[in-house]
Every structure is written in C-alpha cells, then in structure tokens.
Image (cartoon, rainbow over all chains, first blue to last red; front, side, top):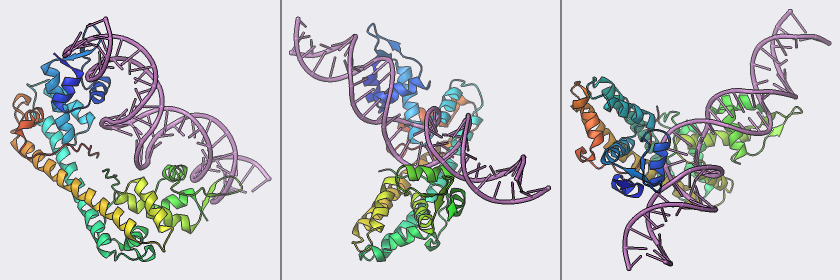
Length: 146
Length: 146
DNA sequence: TGTAATCTCTCTAGCAACTAGAGGTTCAAG
DNA sequence: CTTGAACCTCTAGTTGCTAGAGAGATTACA
C-alpha cells in the first residue's frame, strides 16, 4: 500500500490533485490507516496513471470519466471509446490549425517591428486594426500561459 | 455615444465581458446616462477592439494590460512591445509543437482500434500504459474544449 | 400619454482544473 | 522520545469569463 505522497510521486501527480480527483469522484475513496491517512493499492495507481496520461492527451475530466466507465465494462463494444478518441483528435487538429494562423500573424507583426518608437510600432498598429490581418484567425479565444 | 449593447455588437464582445473588463480596470469607467446606463465613445470602441484582437492572438489579460499601458506612451521605445509579441510567438510555437506530438499519438491510438471489444481496445490500452507512447508528449496539460 | 417589449443595472454565484495556505495530526528515523 | 517530514481538513484563490435574480431605464407603437 502506498501513501498519497508515494502515489503522487509514482504517477507524476501532485498530492492536492489526487485529493481533488477523489473529491470529484474520479478516484474512489481511499482506504485509511489507523491514523486516517489515505492508503492506495496498485489498482488505484494504474487508474491514476490512466487519468494523467489522458489529461496529457488533452481529454477533459468529463471525457476521462466516460473512458473510465467504459473500461470497467471490458466486454462491451469499442465504438464509444473510439469515438471519444476521434473527437479528441479532431479537436487537437482544429486547435493546431488555429494556432498556426496565430503564429503567422504574430510573425508578421514581429517581423515588421523596426525597433522605433511606439507611435510607429507595427505590433500596436496591427492589434488595433483587425483589417491588417492576412488570415482569419477565428474567434477561438484561448490564453497561452507560460 | 453607444450603449453597452451597441458597443458589444460592434466589437464582437459580450455585454458581461465588457463590464468585466471595466471591473478589472482594462476599460475605464464609462460615462453614464441620466438613468445610470453606460455610454461609450469611439475611443473606447477602439480600445475594446484592440483587447479583443489581442485575446484572439492568445495574449493574457495581464499582457494586454501592459500593451495598453505602452500604447498610451507613443514616444517611448518599441522594444517592450516587441518583447511581449516575441514571447507570445514563442509560446504559440511551443504549444503547436506539443499539440503535434499529441496528434501523432492520438492518430496511432485511433488507427490501431480494430473495432472489437473494450478488452482489446488499443485506446484504453495506450492510455493505461504510457510506455506505449512513441513520442514524449511532455507534461504540458491543457484541456482542449470543444 | 400609456404600456409593453427590450435594454440595462448591480450583485452573487458558477465553470474548469486545479493551487495555495492555515492550523492541526500522524508517522518514521534516530 | 523527540524531531521533522508527511499527512489531514477546510477555505479561498486563480483565469477569463458566463449565468441568473430582481430591479430600473429606454424605446416603439397605439
């Protein structure tokens, strides 16, 4: 049996995240030690690894909930699982396409900046006037955090 | 002078979003009619268009705040603006690269699914076992919502 | 001028998917 | 047996909005 710290280290998931997954029902309530600390089995470790991997692939927690539900019924048809994966693939493809349009526009902006004063800055200019855009970069608004 | 509804329609921004931008100080407090309704000038419309466009390009509201602050000082150097745009460009490039790794893996998963039962499903199998992954798709976790 | 429809107001609460912190308990090593 | 790391619960915060309640303002038409 693993403590929550060992489990987190093994699966690459932070401790509060594990508790959060339990809270929202993605992970079952853990066994407890005599002192009320959570104890996990291999089965839970596999389940958590599954969740983490699916998260890395961009599946939402809701989609993962479905996937886990399906994987608990191994004699059913694969069709639903396949559909979820295909949906995810399409979403990723769409996102790549939009990001590439953004990239093009950002490159144009940066390339045109001659390093003068802000009054002549192409970046500010382009941001202020959508008509400058070469491509339609759509309405898909997503912050890129980094 | 525009009411908030007209402004929103003109700029493609929803009404609560405009009020939200005012609340967090991205837009100045609007003039008010005798009945306390917000009234906007062309200047604010331009500012809102700028914000929206920058959001579409993936700039965070904090970055936009910086950009707006810089654009209010048109005689200063363009360097800071340029740096913000370059940072944004790098972030977008990084995100594209990671998404492409995800796409590759999702394609492999979907391609291997023979349409049998879940017990034999490659998608479930791959999700459960990271060792199946061809590429390292990294730890950058982001839900693709759609 | 009346009134009905549409806007707008403020305020609070909610969404995803966590993350951070306070204040207290339990466990393992020496 | 003590120290310090790891654990517990609980609340609140993050980003960028969105939704709803309940009230007031404005506009269009008769």
